Length: 256
Image: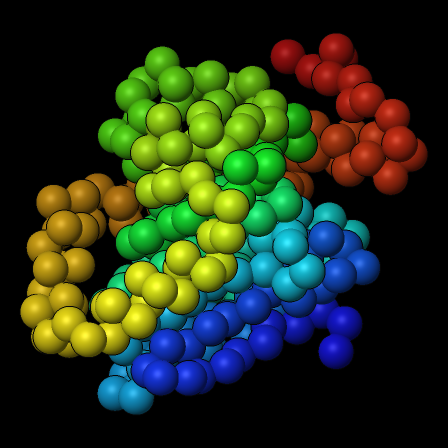
């Protein structure tokens, strides 16, 4: 059980734990496929009222496993891609999703939080959306959702500089709800509360909250995926990944 998703259903809460300890819980294509399957089934399973996302061992996720991710870049823009299946399953999930974040939340580890309903993070958590550092553009609707939450100036800072930022900054940018010493414990308390609410009313409330941006989000995500997929096949990404594995700074000076 190296890279996997641990699924536990208890008291109507499906906890999905990201588990890849050798890579700081980085996502592989197999893990995306597992998450997609779990979410797709949970959406139609009346025994599941709430989904809780967490990371194993005090780490949420370090983003994509680059060694795994670079093997199949051409598949990313396809609806059958495990990554895209997961993205759509979470973005369209009709029931409440709560996330408990610790350690690091890098790349999609941060952007997936934009599609959760309640998010709690440890004070020492570090967030990052380093897409430009990898020669890539934003993904998962972040170019639409983040400016709406944080404002254009803050969104530009986070997406264009691609630097680490704190849990306090994430809260100020409205990416998370609360900074708390025991995020998983609080997340479980909130999940328990949600399971006691009228389920149809919760689904309708979530749908209404998402409705104004839904069409725009679908269009933006499609455009982002196209550009992201192109970027994965480009020289800038090749240089970034080569530099990563050579443990040096990427040199983009020859690109225009």
